[in-house]
Image: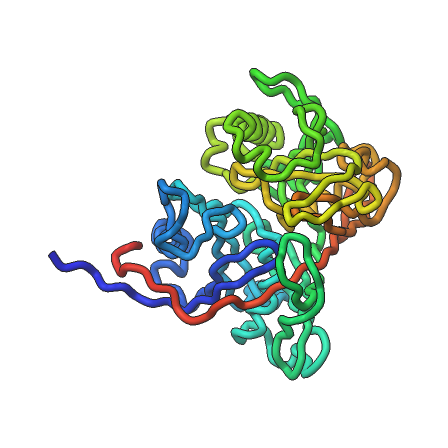
Length: 396
């Protein structure tokens, strides 16, 4: 029996922030995958190596974690005053599913670099030495991201001394501005607080009623108090990811929170929307040892945050969740703000499993509605490998 030979597709494997994924130019994809649909999903699933019942993604480019099971498609922007359109796909590991419902803030740091290196940004906008400002249209959520990409000798500068907790080696700093980050998610009406409240009583059958801040900023996120669910906020991955009961608890909270936020109609739909919303829990500063063995002291942070991504505790912090943290911290009365000590603030440094991260945001209240002009944070990015990925020709 004859089998279809493999085909090869131009691709770049990149790290952005504490994530990595496979980047494509839209024009390089096979014609059937240049539009959203089953063919595109099947192709990208095969590239990453999903679904894999062994949860290793051995037969693909994925790294068997939510942080490393990602794809990005980029094209010259169709939007006015933007350089590049950026579409992100979060690939499930053990299921035949790609979630297109949200952004990846970490990989956003690599978008400008890829766009410049692959001719998606007008050459007149790139200095010979200095910083290129890349205007990114985040197509998943319809938002603008501004990336400040360092340039040396007319090329992207990737090496440097900027250190990011959760990433082993230093690199060049890339500053990101997430403009008007309140997400206009399906059913959420574009409101930063879809329930109209800074803090809600979230009823979870079989669990009880939990205080929750549910916010659409960066990515829809449900914030809880760590102590309300039996945690300290200083946990590392092993404390939760090895506990099936804990994972079920967080998924149940996520499902019922998604309904309250108007993102889904009933909890049964949560399995088809795994990337959003996120669930995170917060606590006041405390001393702990990060996953790298680094001591984090009380003085190092304003608060502690731990967040779930694709059903597991994240090893550091998702970039989009960091935007949600910074935004919520800037608004007096949210659980995030209260854990940080309350009051007005324009930036916050939080502790996560791999260390600490600072994010800035400035909130304003207009006609009773909270708005945030932008959230700012620094990441780094670099090309890990470039060339072609190969997939069986009949895989999509």
